[in-house]
Image (cartoon, rainbow, N blue to C red; front, side, top):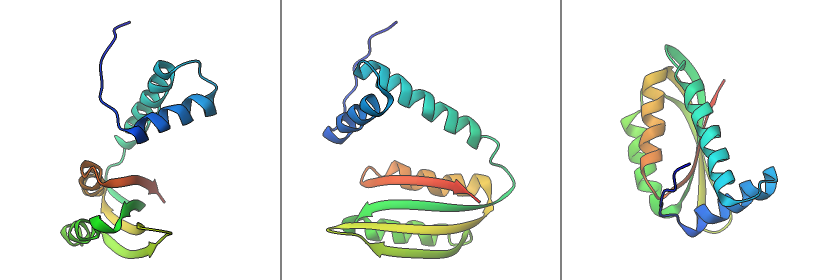
Length: 127
């Protein structure tokens, strides 16, 4: 096995601890491998995400990213059937997008959110 060096945020380290504790893993390396396997499995299932799709896209973010979320929504307006926005406690927001359109374009919208490091969580749920 190779040893690699990575930079992680405090939140990433908390997430590793959560994975480790929830899955009963012995160390951080096992937790990272577990997370990688989950991610690879998800990517594999999305490869068949072609043709017209109906999905819910969930985006959790801070108030400071509201302009970015709005700009992204307008960029992919042809996909958006409806959107619900609500503020949670503090400075957190959640946007729920009901999308319909080509799977590849839906993934591009998701990836646009994913590339913004200030977006906290993203979930794409096929319906």
